[in-house]
Image 1 (spheres, rainbow, N blue to C red):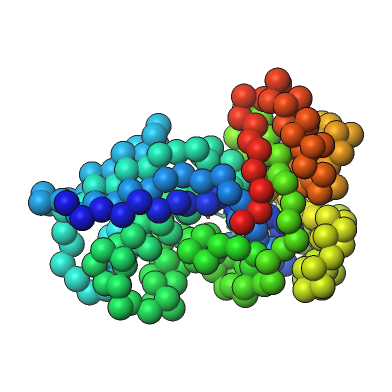
Image 2 (image 1 turned 30 degrees about the vertical axis):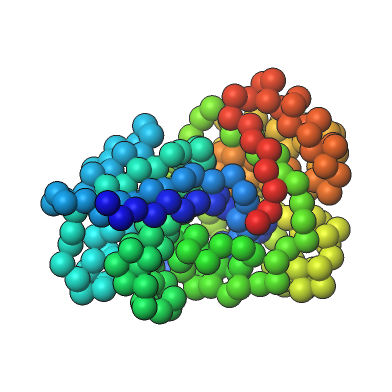
Length: 283
Ligand code: C5P
């Protein structure tokens, strides 16, 4: 049985800005994305059977699973007859957390299928297929440090960000993405990220400049019931984080640390209160 196992890295938003509401009801975003070493392991195997069998932790492995959608999009985009597949995802990245875990698993399936079935396929062709699976999937395919625009599918790769150790803390509640978007009035948004300043700091390799400009505009429209997000940020700052923010539409909060020992201590302290606390770094 031919099989490939690939890592699917989580992402953070170093910045997230909302530029405008579009006629199709979605919003144009501008985000600086960064992948971190926290990852799922995705194994794709060609089987003798027909159809796709997907096992993905607690997440249903049916046609709604983004990895299954990715496999279907691959067969369709490559113009090849679907074959039997098994997809096994060893989950570490929490779901519904703002870390693009599902999109990253889907991107790993696309890379695995190219390797197994069509190694000659160009990267840009795979990227084109990935955009049909979901807005974050093209970024997850590329990884690293990148500017994502539009709904997230328009990408510009950037110089790799300076190194940071990362503490991630996911509180035990979900924040519905549509609810957050529905609270956005573009003209009333305050506390928006300085994206050009962030791009400049990244270009210069200026770690302090990067830390200063970490910002997610969704924090300014969070309803009061999610105040815990700000408590976590405040605690991480007191524990020595150079920057903190919510990632994506939350609820995960991350702290960036230049000081490894401070990050280790912060991790230990936050992990006492939050079961889903992770210690990781940029990749
Ligand atoms: O992409 P996803 O299906 O998670 O988005 C959920 C909802 O969030 C969309 O139906 C839309 O209302 C809103 N959204 C948006 N602009 C985006 C992404 C999502 O308005 N770029």
